[in-house]
Image (tube, rainbow, N blue to C red; front, top):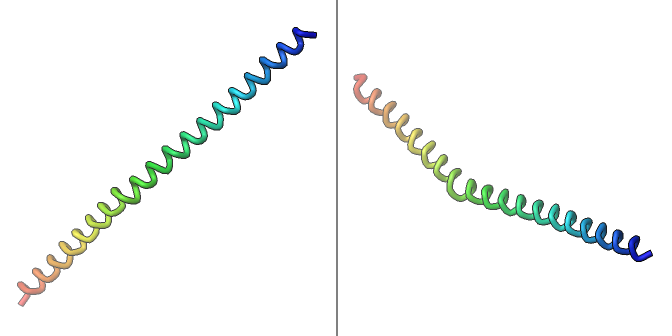
Length: 71
C-alpha cells in the first residue's frame, strides 16, 4: 500500500510541475507579447506616421514648385 501512495504522490507532484510550467510559459509569452505591442505602439507607429507626414509635405512642396514655374 505504501508503494501505491508513493507513486500517487510522485504523479501528483509531476502534474503540479507540468501545470505550473505551462502556466508560467503562458504568462511569460503574454508578457513578451505585451511588451512588443507596447513598443510598436509607442516607437514604431509614431515614427511611421512622422515619415508619412514628411513624404506628404515633400509631395505638396514639389507640386507647388512645379506650379510656380509653369507660368
